[in-house]
Image 1 (cartoon, one colour):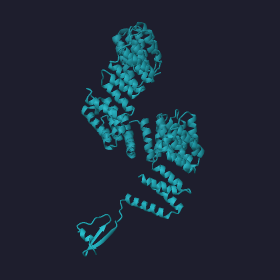
Image 2 (image 1 turned 90 degrees about the vertical axis):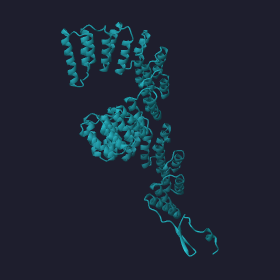
Image 3 (image 1 turned 90 degrees about the horizontal axis):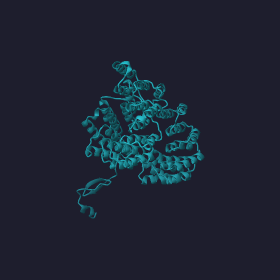
Image 4 (image 1 turned 180 degrees about the horizontal axis):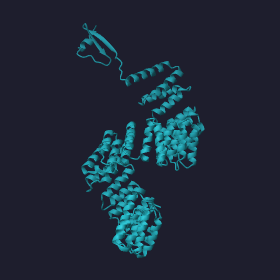
Length: 607
């Protein structure tokens, strides 16, 4: 049974009911008053009460409008069975598509997939489809990702001449945006004879979701300058995340100016998007200023500023904002908690993390997958492997992030065999390991010389296409090197992308073998390619020189290391200096300097 959302709505409904009863003796209502009563129903019991009044006053099943209102209300409160009953009772009195359209819409509202039986029956019975039929049924196609049915209905739209209807066109954009590709959406948009701002917003949204950021910004500019329409709140909220994704603060500022000029800055949704875009673009002060100037704040506002600060690694500031949020009486939600847990990990405030875990338990948020994954990571990094395992085991539906966090937990806490076994278990459970999985488990194999499972993981990485990932290839190279198989490590190195880490792994690996000269060769190759030589590079090559008793090369590497250290600290070596006496006058000069104001004939004269 549906529970009342609050006492105020219950009292308001009963007040309306009593008012109508006073106006109409013996509880008789007019048709208009019953429509008002149904539209004001805030719960399933209130809807049933309205339904009963309509039956008592003999308006049902004949009244199409009352039946349609009740069908939608029952669907809203998750009672589609009664909606269907009402439809079949009133259908004999229906002479148009209105009641059919209402049922299609109601099933969509109730999230009931009838496999388009209602629409198919409607067509079979020869009911004349209208401009409301297609938007409702296309919405159902978009919700259920029914591509083939949607294309079939698109054909019917053209056949019956509804392709010029802007409302139908916008719903086609929604359908292809959910089910098709960007090309389909763009084609429908280009073929629309009439467009409105919803059409433009739909295309901007599709470009944004599919990562076509430059096109989304270009389209926003087109909407603003040449479409004949002005961007509204939806346009702005759709394009600002694009600026955040591109870290394009300049365009973000321009859109902010437009927002202020048009008065959209009073909308909390727009303000929240601005807080986020400034944060993602690195403008901390601007993000905080927009947040402070918000006339109204909600949970999303606080989440936006906290996630922005966390994104910029301003962890102490993020923690302070979280405290202000709590002090302000705003209840944190799953987004807040899952954003704060990594912040506490970075600040090493693990006890505070346990308090957040307790908070999530008290408010029933522990089942949220994002919080659970963040808790696993927090407990793993604090060395509490058992607590991480407890959180993992209580997750109902684990995702790939859950498995990866748990593999990392075992690997980081020296439970190498458990890490390898968990990767096997996740595959048995139907989860496909990704590059993060392999990057987490391969160091575990490397530490204990677990060559055979390492080779199995290598094969799996090749099958899934993850072996081309730089982090995976480096982990594979490291695993083979530490297992004593430098030939296999070198083979992975040769066929993979390489960075400084790739070279350092082999420099260290070869320095411990009889083939130490290979470390020197790789070290020189790094210098020739302009790669950054770090502490690991120098440690590896000096160790190789020691094993080779190569004193000359060792001194050269030592000199190179000293010069790099001096450069990093801003120190300078005094340049070489010499002098020459010409006509009883001494001229001093340093390396690379030219003598000025000296007669060249003197330099060429005989002594």
